[in-house]
Length: 426
Image 1 (cartoon, rainbow, N blue to C red):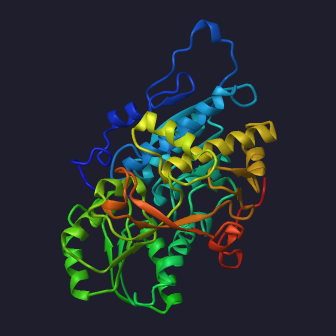
Image 2 (cartoon, helix red, strand yellow; image 1 turned 30 degrees about the vertical axis):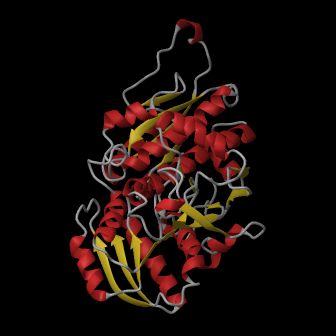
Image 3 (cartoon, rainbow, N blue to C red; image 1 turned 45 degrees about the vertical axis):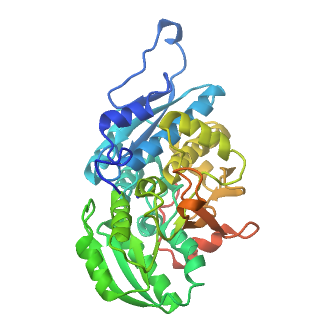
């Protein structure tokens, strides 16, 4: 997920965010903006309101912009085909900001706006509290950007689903490459100091133990850190074979830029990387092997069309957050149609086990017992400048994990190891 104000796509103002996302003429609404309804459609059926909570400010704002754009495209596609159950989709987008604000916005969407479901969140801390609010109100919530295993583990809920991959899925994907590197014996962890990072560190250390490698250092780093020099000096002194970054938001950008500036030669890998936040690093500075949820150059049905629509709105191709929010809205539209209802209880039942396609070349589905989307992930390596064709062409996919023909359950949290004890159906 690192430049600061200099990098246009990383420093996202609220005005810039709203301008980029826009309003789907009568089909999507952002906070404080309501579509004009002319006399000719006063008697039309009420739209199906869907809330979206994504960061519009702060160190995760770039991810929020991409997520909102993905959801907008999905809603437009549904509405262009007549909507669902004869009704248009209307998105109401709220700022995630921090966990307290996210919980407040969830209550507002449920109680005032009467949404049939909420999608979004990027911060795991926010997703946890929005999930609690959704369960309390018995309103469907689809987490599209938070990775913590806890959301689909000890804090799982009947009314919460996840299109975003779990930390276990991400780390399992990069393990495909790491476990084939016997020379990478000494690891140093750099981790964001909040719920997401703590959970990802735990999962990454399990991989370290499985691989029989040695931890030579570990640092918890405050979110929004601009200067990594003190941490990189410690890394340099420890002389690890591998720096394993578990960073979030613009911290990824800053770390990767400064790592190259320090002239460090050891290998870099990570439990997660956000494409939109490493584009600003530039291919000259970028290095490492990472897991991805999705990649805009995959050769699967629907990818090129989605990329073209996204670039027309945002200027950039879509990345993991854009894909996750797009997929959530499309899957929700399918389920509303399938169960012929917008009632949350019916939607939850319809979502459990729901199968669909979404630009990954195989059928995806939500597990019934923890509501995690089961899907493949991708292991990528960074390209050299001579290998790239444009500024977005920074990764080469070296493995689809699991490979085509194998069950995607292989990289997800096994039920026997899960702490998910979901509330019984209503």
